[in-house]
Length: 419
Image 1 (cartoon, helix red, strand yellow):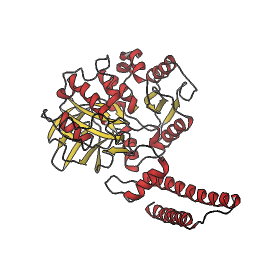
Image 2 (cartoon, rainbow, N blue to C red):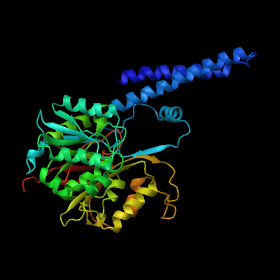
Image 3 (cartoon, rainbow, N blue to C red):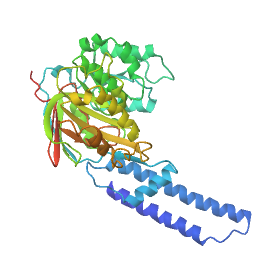
Image 4 (cartoon, rainbow, N blue to C red):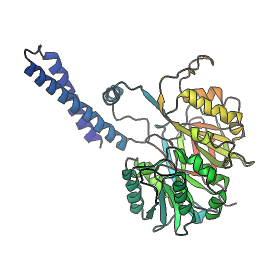
């Protein structure tokens, strides 16, 4: 893959040099015909360059290792971003490139029968936003390749559907005795409306894994509230453009092979060790469940809080965390793991940190200064899960352990399982 990318880079930069040379050497056209011809040549060259950048970017994402190594120079990345995105604002990412090692152990806890075996039927639904046919087919074919029998819900790939339609698919997936688990095609928006009308005892009585993330955070909270574990993981993208290490981890966790992670830490991490039920998910979505009937933080049991988000600026992230702080969610946590912050606008708007002791260097810097400096618990930053290219799965609603040292942190899932 690296050799192919190198060859493509050579081709693109040769074309770029040709285009620049052509533009610099062109004398002023003497006729309309000559002007049109040269414009066509120059435009074609730039189309080739932009297409080349797009192909390389696609290949780069496929080949991206779990490390800080980059397959292309910073200059090339900036040129590609400029060529593909035009005048769009620069977007930043935190946490995606954290070095991470994974080992697996068999699940031996009280929910062992919830994990999957070859041939099991899995309901394929989308209880948030509607997906496209391509996304749905990716899930159907991917689950078949893993040895399962996917069954598509009635209201997945439709032009539109009502709240009642989505609820019908979800209730079918829960109540059908032949269905072993629920795989969500995509997140998006709207889960909180469904959870408002979903009978919570149905989740507790049927005890089936639900698999997804982002807006599916609402369902994770509802499942945890009812004592049922769930899996926070990638959805349709698992089967289309996903790093091998994450693909393997998701395939294994469905079967009850539980990952333990060891990641590099950074200067913002807060050392210590804690154990508790793993809760959380997408920050903005999780904030919406606070105070609801499916608020999993309303417990006297210790918990480890995991949070990530996409497309939110530092001001919005601060606002959501402030809500959690005021509700006592951060103070009650035994430990906190922050995942990826992706598609961050580089413009910090009105909350740059200048009014709080100096400009923030990053989201982690803002959180460390504003939210965790007065709570004595372990806090890890940069766990590679969320909306970035890297999205390792998590077993929610089961006991997890976080241990943060000066140069690394360990994040163990499904620990102390026999209770």
